[in-house]
Image (cartoon, rainbow, N blue to C red; front, side):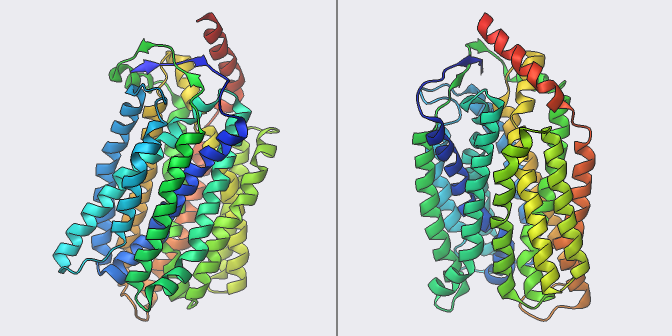
Length: 452
């Protein structure tokens, strides 16, 4: 493994790189937002799996995928090509990611046991392909620039593109399913995913051509053992990592339960499109103003402001229950807070990497990004598994009028548990102190660079 700190500032322009970097998350969201919003519903109501089977599937896949995340991080840190360390994987992972996404939304004409095996193979394969393209998105950021403000701009651009992708999926998926399915939801979901997967694959190729790893590492061999030992003293990263579990757990609980809540609790499945659109468009406002706030206050403070707004929106929705006006107002407030919080989260992600290099002399961008990605997937797996268990507890039955217990289970998944997780996220982030130290850390790292 090689450690790096040599800077190069020539090559691809800032705006070209910002657009190229953002396009990767647009590509990811065209595919992964389909997974987040609709895969559980697809599996239970269309594919024909029981909720508890889906819960186990999500959990098992995430455990296997978590090991792959760490291995991917090690692989990135050991990679040394003319294209850099992280960038090659946008090229290598694009086609597998798109192809497996299509297969995941295909319903084969086989028995229940065969379908379950097929779901495991395709979903696990899709998750591994996602690892190949998603971990590099995080690990490449410290290599794109050493400037803290430019990192925030890159992270903001990434989030804007991500929300564009999420908006496209949220607003167009169900209409496309109806248009392309010819009365068949299974065909509709399949052909909709074909469109999103093809576009996503092409966007990853675009990203590969339009980003450049400008922060090069000096040729110091660092063992895998040294890399993991370097994590031991990185307290800011520990705090950040625990926060990932709560922050993304809240998000995945809501996203996976949205279509259930508006179909069964509210009795307005058409509102699922509206609220999903709010959840993907409104956060762009928070994302756009993030650089303004982050240049005037600590990043942690920006995160807390976003979290408070997100929590307020959830509270409004909880008390609104099935009142459409209240739900829409709460959705807007929650989405605005989520945009602010999520954008600054991606900007903060690179800072513990620099802290670790400053403290230990070892840069572990790949491993840190991989472990962060693993924790995010654990959050997704746990959210999916617990959601399925709660639905089973409430005696949820597909495509029928739900009992009061089932409606309560859906509300717990969609609103109550996410609100609790936002509170836990705020508690853990109250211990994050890196923002005040970071300018001096960056100054010292640059001084070491000049000495070298």
